[in-house]
Length: 163
Image 1 (cartoon, rainbow, N blue to C red):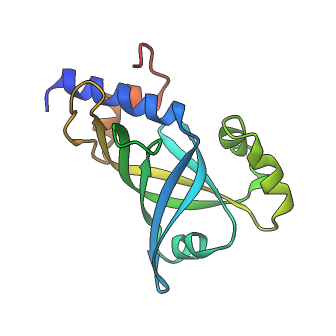
Image 2: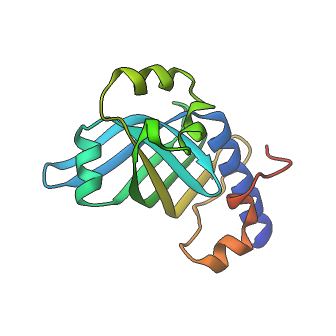
């Protein structure tokens, strides 16, 4: 994929991250595969997610590799990805909670009412970015390498001129 297409795909990814506050998280563990909706936030190239102690939570503790889909219910502009999740601890003790709270203020009440809500950070290892709203950006796959992150600074810092 050429550099112009990579840049356009990254702008689409930033747009999708910015305009969605929930995503589908897919995990697997000894209880099997599980998919669930969760609030997320993105900052500095990481995705943050708050989980109660359900199947996705247990699966991540067992097997940290995850898959996610960020879309608004219409398959015209979306991001699919793989990543490695790590537990950061109870959401009320983590400064990074603001990443999600500023997008989904309703999560504050959820985090206070349900005991054991934990904040996880996902380091994306692959992103597949698609935009059918104008043209198809075919599977822009960003590999998990520092060189790739340096080559695509739009992923790790705020991007200007996003679609």
